[in-house]
Amino acid sequence: MNSFFLTNRGRVRQINEDSCGVFFNKSGQMLAVVADGMGGHLAGDVASSMTTSQLQKYWEENDKVETSDSAEKWLKEHISKVNTNIYSHSKDNSECKGMGTTIVAAICTSLFSTIAHIGDSRCYVLNGNGFQQITEDHSLVNELVRSGHITKEDAEHHPRRNVVLRALGTESHVEMDTKTLILEDGDKLLICSDGLSNKVSEGELKEILENKESIEQKAERLIQLANNYGGEDNITLIIVDYTSESEGE
Image (tube, rainbow, N blue to C red; front, top):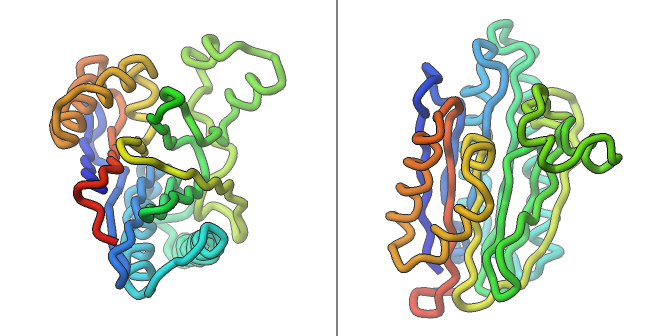
């Protein structure tokens, strides 16, 4: 498999509160992480960078995950540990009070991908069944859609669409959703912050992921498109391309 990640400040924000990375354990298995910090002057960038750097350290110390159950257990244990660390840091440092971050973390092996997420950053999959979002936003507007109070189209323009109901580091304990996918040759994962998903339609995401360009070119095109549409938020993405040619596990 091949991967590429990219983050961009966007055209409006003064700082980039997003953080991302692709890391490998001792067996060469991949962990892809996107974190979108929240809090502005309350150090959202600190929360997101703590998340990626600490998960990198934990993952690089790991030998191997054998099953999806062990992958899910690893994600829950270590994301919970990061939550505790961020929450403690915010309590001990007044300038960081109230900071938090979304997270999508995907353990990608040659047999499966196990994804954990908190907040409204997303993971999409492109496979033989088409292009679909596989995470469900922990957001106010998504709850309104789920309860039938507004439509999905209404949610795209709702004035409170950025209100997140669940975040990493804002409480002493946090719940996360996990899911495992069986991926085949040619399938792709797109993990991104809402700076991309709020600006670029699912049809456009699908079209770019399906084209014949390299994943580096696809990532750059997606960033450019989000900026062309206003770039009001930081924009971060990871593309994981499952290809038999370069799988090394």
